[in-house]
Amino acid sequence: MVKTAAYCRVSTDLEEQSSSYEFQMAYYKKYIEEHSEYSFAGIFADEGITGTNTKKRDEFNRMIAECEKGNIQRIITKSISRFARNTLDCLQAVRRLKELGVGVYFEKENIDTLDDKGEVLLTILSSLAQDESRSISENCTWSIRKRYERGEVFINTSQFLGYDKDEEGNLVIHKKQAKIVKEIYQWYLDGWTASQIARELEKKRAVNWNGTTKWHESGITNILKNEKYKGDALLQKTYTLDFLSKKRVTNDGKVPQYYVEDNHPAIIDAEMWECVQLEAKRRKQYMNEHTLMGYSRCSNKNPFAFHVICGECGRGFGRVRWASSKGPRFVWQCGFRYHQKGIIGCHNRHIEDSTIELAFIRAWNHLVEDQSNYLEHWNALVKGDDLLKKYKAKQFIELSKNGRITEHVEWKLVLKVLDHIRIYESGEIVIAFLEGTECQF
Image (tube, rainbow, N blue to C red; front, top):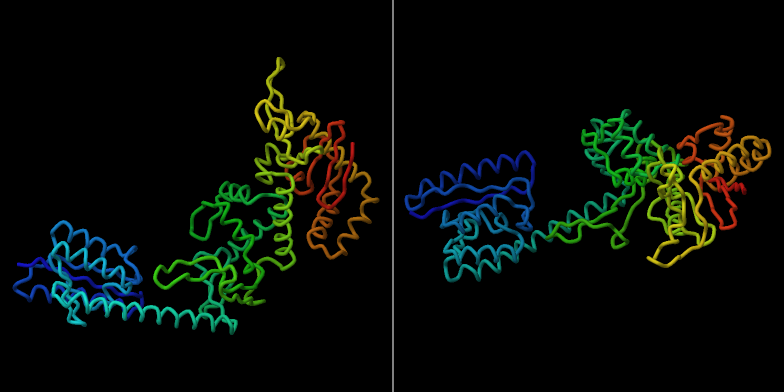
């Protein structure tokens, strides 16, 4: 008795294909049981998975493993295209099975791989099957791009925070999720980093698109860059590299992209969305200019992190803990001072933690007390073309109404208004605000 198994595969999850899947299972079980020379060794079936390679076909790979154990001596399958559409994968599998003494019978082509002529015919027909797969892939790609050219947009909302689809397939705003999206944009313009936003959302137990309360920096960054939140749609951001691997890669200009304006209701207004893009660009330039690895860190405990800059070499100051007879103290010093062990890279002085905070308080209070003199500058920015400066100027006008700082610095205020603090060896301190004002002490 030959230990015989069957392999079948349905390549899509359409309802009619699912019934075909069930039919194949029943058909092959009956087929094997009706042949007296066969003993039933199981049915292996992959459903809803591409056949262009065998890497993700769990049942196919399990079947091969059973053959290697000697539990299967013969395999029956409907056709070459069901077994594999990739010529190389198909031939490698068949040859490996042949070495094990396992034959594969393809019903449609009437090929038995243990026959002398079997592999020659199989090579020819496998190539044809692979070419058919390429043709189908190219036709699908052509069809999708033609829809893009006509401005027809398909957006998957299952992994898209802020939107659902109505019965006609149109995007509609998910109010609860949209509130989170608005918070993310607002916090970013208030000086928060994507990492800080993710931590805050987890702290608040905010529910993500996948139903969990887990948030990641990369996910926040993607939300902040996504033009769909202002109602537009950039099509073909990625494309399939080739029809065999199905690997999708970022479109760097290799294939056309299409931009559709006002495609669906916006959650974020266009001006705010643009401000976020400008702010992201500003932060990147800021970090490059001062050789910084980040923009902010642990803001509620240390709001000045990455915002204290050496006036001598332009690099960032770091906050360090010093031990003393009166207990530990925190000071700031240039990160390049001890860049190399035993060699002083920058001779700029260190500065007390309390001095940094006091300098900021004095500078902010100066803006508040002289508000009437600064209003002209802020109003000019509001009327200007620089959207980010316009946004910040409006923010400064409102924040300055809250009055002077009398005691402790509120970390959220620091993030909203401070660009950086420059420290010079002479003892001079310069507070640079985000709307362009500088105060010197």
